[in-house]
Amino acid sequence: MTTEITLESLCGEHLLSGVDFSERTVERYGSTETVNVCRFRLDGTTYVAMEDPADGYRSSMGSLTTEEGPTTNEWSPVRVVGSMSAGGDYGQTNETLELRDVVTGETVLRVGTDNTEDYYPWWVAEFDPTALAHNKDKP
Image 1 (cartoon, rainbow, N blue to C red):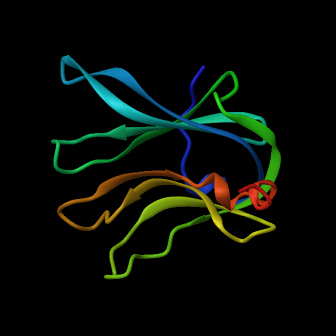
Image 2 (cartoon, one colour):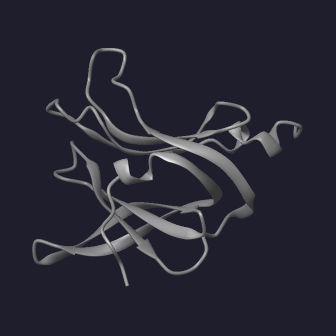
């Protein structure tokens, strides 16, 4: 069963244990379309963020739901803190969740929509495994 979730509800401390990316075919306006998907596992729950490609020039996060099962890439849980992204360098408004590793303070995952108040918003799904504390000693 899927449940619609808000990014704001994921603010605070969590255990992150997986992230993966894929594409899915969805029905939209009477036809099918391929969209980008970012799945991430917090506190044992798999969250699914799906892109809304809009018209090919603009995009945004279309939905955030949960689903059963693990992500493709899994590791021992890492403590992260979720917060909503601050505005960009040029004053744009973002609706993007940032998950930061508690030990390194670095951003591990960003997902949502940047530049929401402009004519060209864009879908954000960025994962940086080098920001995880347990990867700091790896070359």
